[in-house]
Length: 147
Length: 118
Image (cartoon, rainbow over all chains, first blue to last red; front, side, top):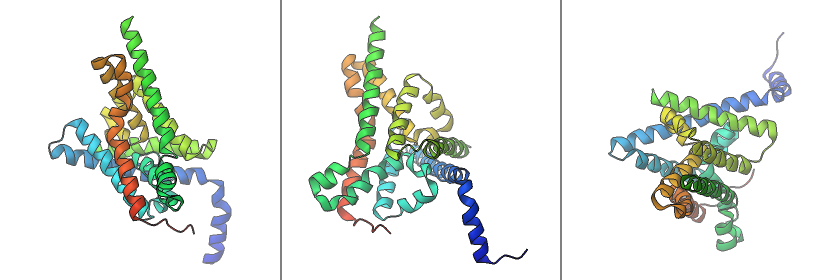
């Protein structure tokens, strides 16, 4: 059977929706893994330059946040995210993207209630629940320590 | 070797997120909140740090690693300052990441123009 490119495209379109999860997971695995590997490279670099273990990890987070913010500003992060799905969401670069993206989009609504407020539209809940879960943990440790 | 471990473990943590998105229709915001809280809980139980020790950035770069960092910082603060440490610990540990995101977020949003939705 001979099929033209156009017919082949049609067949691909027809059958690909049946297994998007596998394809999505593949994208998430490779791009998420690549971002973490870049992070490992940065940790090794900062450790090599003399940073302590904790400082190297912190500097790595800051560097990844910067790169993600820049790529988001250039409109490139969303292009990668289309292929990567959770691969660009779950790493800390996804957190930075979630800060920059709404801030940029809502700049037109003003610098205070537009940019300033929307900066926290997704990162706010992350900080609220993350910090409060940690406070709860700290309180439990304290109470248990007293007993 | 540490690169391979970071790649595989980091990749798997992201795949879990992808499966959650595809199977449960959780929004990205809920996924992020879930990862941080899961990181705090696993960190509190002492289960996450061994993964960081094994996989390095593969476990610390995903947002669950950020949660683990909050739990770790809180424990240290409570050990040092008592109950007050429970209040100061979490955001002290997360300060660099959060402040960097806010700072670069502001700068990028000021400098760049929103991309046209096409």
